[in-house]
Amino acid sequence: MPCVALSLPATGNWSCAASRTRTPVRARETPAPARPLLRALPRRYAPPDAVASADELAGARIIVSLPAGSVLTGAVLRPAGSGLEAQVGPGERVAEILAHGDPHAVVPGARVDVLVTRQGDGARAGTTALALEDVEVLDAHAAPADVGDQGATGEARVVADLRVHVRDAVYLAAAQAFASDVRLLVRAPGDRAAADAGLTVDERLR
Image (cartoon, rainbow, N blue to C red):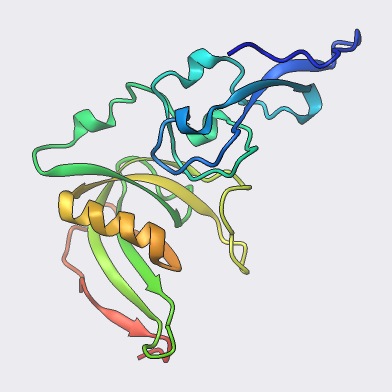
């Protein structure tokens, strides 16, 4: 995957420092479906962690969905052999989600409750439910500023890897695709008490 030379000026302000996706790519896919193309960009336009080598893409996965033309950076890639799968036991899975949450609190080792909000469809009211509780965070980082809608309030989002059972992993995948909002509430250290899983409040706040 060679860098494409674009009449590089002699000033040295250009850099073969960016890889763009030719087609959209979904979260948790490898970059291969997007057929990335390395392009030379002005250094001032290339993100500091932009992927500049095909070697960095080998075996990696995309953390969040990206449209065609996106610059691939270290923030949206999970390198091959990250080792998270080694931390789960039989019947468990690593579920990667993009959710509202405090990047300073949603950190590896934290335990969180997961809220899922569904919009109403006219026949049914919109609801927010305590979908999962006491879930371990295996890894997390702040979502890139240009990924996803930050919402009218400008709330921060995080990309988090959660240790869950298979059924919960399937639920979270569906929530990521169809729910209007997913939110992580961090528990106090040592708080393992059962809350009220399944508690639902509708858009009438009752």
